Image 1 (cartoon, rainbow, N blue to C red):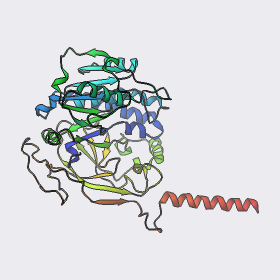
Image 2 (image 1 turned 45 degrees about the vertical axis):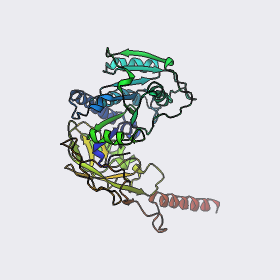
Image 3 (image 1 turned 180 degrees about the horizontal axis):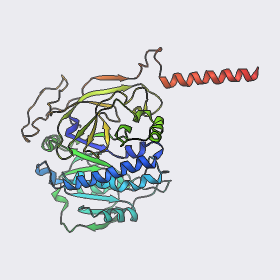
Image 4 (image 1 turned 180 degrees about the vertical axis):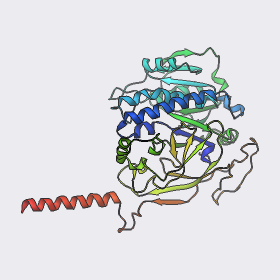
Length: 405
C-alpha cells in the first residue's frame, strides 16, 4: 500500500545520483560527496526533533542493511567511498522517527565501518551469509529478514516495509539466531516483545514521513495483511544544480542529455518540516527508447517539472518514480483526489491536527495515463533512436555497395 500524497511517506534513493554521474567524473562526484556529508550533519541536527508523536513509532523495530558493496558500478572505486555518508544519512533520517534500530552487516570490515560511525543503534549484528559466485554477500537483506522473522515469530508483528516483504515468509535456509554475532550494544535494554511493527530498508534511502498516525492506522486496520511501502524517489545529478559548471563539465554532460535540462525548475523543501503535497496522478506510459526511460533524451524526464530538493544541499529528484508513478505538486498541503470507485471521497482524519487528511479506503491508483514519447501504435511515429539506427544502417549498406562496385 502507498500513500495517496507522495509527501506523506517517501524515500530519496541516493545511489542513483552517484551511479548516474557521467563517466564517474571526479569533480562532479566530489560535489555530491560534499553535499551528502552536509546532509548528514543537517539530519543529525534534527534527529531528536521528531515531528510525529504517535506512540507506535517506539513499538517499531527498524532494520537497516549496511554493505560497502557497490552493485551498479563495482568497477568505480570512487563509488565505495560514498557508501558511508549514504548510510549515515539513511540512519539519522530513520532515527528521527523510529529510535529502535538494528543494523545488519555481513563482513568484519563492514562491522568495523558501522562501529566507527558511533551511531545510536540498539545493536549491530553480523550474519554468516554465504557468498555468491562473485564472492559478494548479496543475500544479506534476505538473511536479515529471516533472522528477524525467527525472533519475532511468536509475537504479532505488522510490517512497514521498503522492499515489499511480508510477515512469516518462507526463506530458504533460514539462519538460526545462533549464527549471529552481536558486535555492539549501546547499553540499552530491550526485549523482542516490545515491538509490534517492523520497518525495513536498504542503506541509501533518506526517509521522510508525515501522518504517521494515519499510516499506522492503515497497518492496524489490515490486521497483519497490509504492507505500507514508501514512494521511492530517484535522485539524479542534474547539471543545473552544479555550481557554475565549467565548459568541460557541460561537454561531459552532452553524453547524458537526460541530466542536462535547462527548462527544469527545482522546488526546495524544508528538511525539518516540509510543506506542500504531491498527489497521485496515475502513471506515465513511456515509449521505449532502448534504455532506462529516465534516459530517453527526446522525452523521458525532459518535460517533467518540478524537481524537488530537501534543503540547499539535498540531492534532486524528479516528481516521478522509476516505475513511472506520476504526482502533481502543490505548494500547500491538499486533500488528494481519490478515484471515483472509492466509497468515501474525502474521509477526514483528525489524529494529527497538522495533517488532518487520510483515506480509510484502499483504492486503486488514479487511472490517468500520460504518454511520453511517440505513440508506438502509430507506424509513422517511430522512436527517434530507432530511426537514427535505421538511417545509419542504410548509410553502411550504401557504403558496402560502393566498395563492392
